[in-house]
Length: 283
Picture (spheres, rainbow, N blue to C red):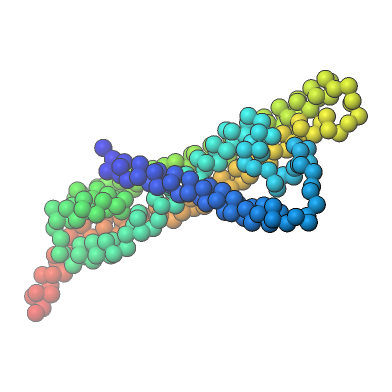
């Protein structure tokens, strides 16, 4: 059973709360920015009355989020779902892949220093690793289980534990790759539906020379295309960033595991005991 499962659910909840707070803050900021302009217009008797805006003359910048989704068609709903999932997993991976969470510096330095100085035996070292619970501690615990064995066995234990830790670090990265693939495909699907709608409007309209006949279908196609690319491009960047961070953490863990192997293997312990006996005889 995984020790980090409850923590994983907690990180998901935290990431979802942060994303919802960001969206809520953006909506409140937009509402507060529009309120003074409305009040000023209402209190100014000399201002000429403008004609009421219609669906055709409302610009993209003045449309609400629901209006953009409605103009883009039903394909916009899965696209915005993809963007929400992308934000949630971005916050989750940013929290989970922090260096201090995977490789806590004070614990690692103290643990290796105590091993090299002979201040910990096998049972004490395992207890320290279990109490810490980080991914680095799990890899150290796998090595300590082979305490006093030949260096090849200890190193193989570290390699096996390192593969499990690397799999834990790479968890959910496929979701970013999935968003990269699905986003443009959904945008292309919405584009096709928008063009079909445009030509259907032309076929059903008597005024084939009017531009308004094509406007709604073309806007639907462009909204879907732009939204699909806007979701996929950040997903590509985030995927590359998190893959690079995982590779750096795996490299650091490999180096630390090798230090533990060189300290608790049978060859290392025999050499350390010989050095202690030489110091005592010299004293």
